[in-house]
Image 1 (cartoon, rainbow, N blue to C red):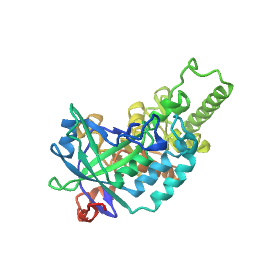
Image 2: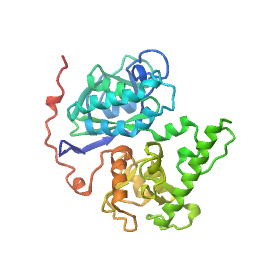
Image 3: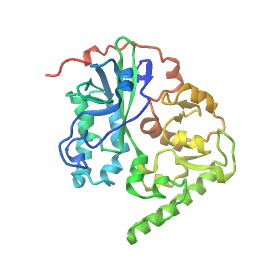
Image 4: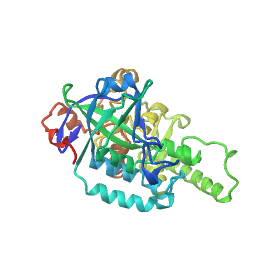
Length: 353
């Protein structure tokens, strides 16, 4: 990945996402009572220590300002129109503005240390920190609909750990109980469990009409899956580039905000395991193992000649690169330079006053 214009080699990707629970977040973001425990459940102790270090480890981590800005833009709809009963639900719109201004004032790299909570009994692995960077994550993340992706970078003797905060769009859709709205045109479901509220039903009916329009418009532009060349409409899914939950009304039904994909590639694209460059190359996430990519039959930087590409799709793909793709997006040129490592991170990891 690149930091401040220079490349750092990736040693490993943590094999599971860390969902931000309610007990970790601060104050107004919380769903329950209390002030938050701060300790973050990572995985089993064995899995956590295999990645971060032996029992009692202290790991040097960092986040990037640009990633936090991306996260805040991606989750803006949830701040403005909350789907959960947050403690300060009515204040979230103003808190979004306040927090975005605060993030904009930060340095490009936000360092923090995490410590193994080895004193906690049992097999579950936890980390904690008193650093400002860690507190920042606790302040801006919304619980259950946010998660952390982690990479191990640099060299094995003195590794660095890159954390990136993502929005779990699937979780938002499930919480909002809008089965059709939040599958963005992929399948229809019954309205048996939907409220009798007339406004609710009108909203769902409006969404269905919009998604039908979206699928029809997308089929006019993309008649087949560019990976499999399948053209049977019954086997194709109308995938959004910028997810439905992050889109405005116009973007939700814009056929340029999508591709027709067969189910496997829809899942890969929807979950951020693949993305595309402007010159129609596919970039693969390190979150999927090399073995699985071989089973799928696709290689990094492959040229996908039938992939529709235009200026409008390029703009939507920028969002996908930053907010959906699992990992640090690298263009083909950046992939070639992946082993350059010249940055001095020591200056970032000093004791806080």
